[in-house]
Amino acid sequence: MTTPNPQRQYDMVFLVVPEKDEAGTLAVIDEFRKLLVDNGATIEKDESMGRRRLAYTIKKRTEATYHNFLFRAPTACVAEVQRKMRLSESILRFLSVRIDEEVKHGLKVARNTKPRRPRPEVSDAPYSSPTPTTPPAEPAGDFRGE
Image (cartoon, rainbow, N blue to C red; front, side, top):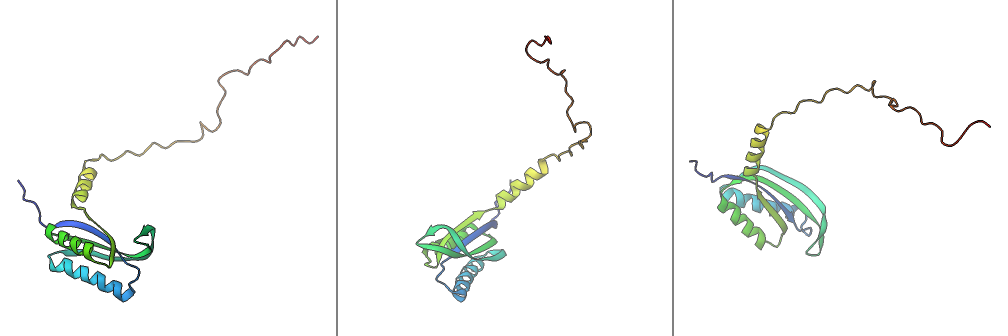
């Protein structure tokens, strides 16, 4: 029996309020980056997606700065970061998803999937024009030529 891995992989996206200027936004991002690292996380991807228009209004705001972290961390670390994000006035929304199981499942499916055979080449020559299989119909009515 295997023991559960305390370092699970997570993907977290969060929205920073648009009132923050670029320096303020970077300070908020640095705060959460430091919180992750201090609680034992190893950050694999740290990507700013820039300021974007929101699909719908959130707390009377129509745009926000998006940021993404891909990291490995224990569950307690993720719970603490989520708690701080809920309390922060600088974060509009956040979503953290555990992706290690999804990646593992995707690899298993790829390993068990049989490769597809390529379809046979279809030649256009014999099927370019359909040939009639029924003789042309006789004209309707009585045409005796009288």
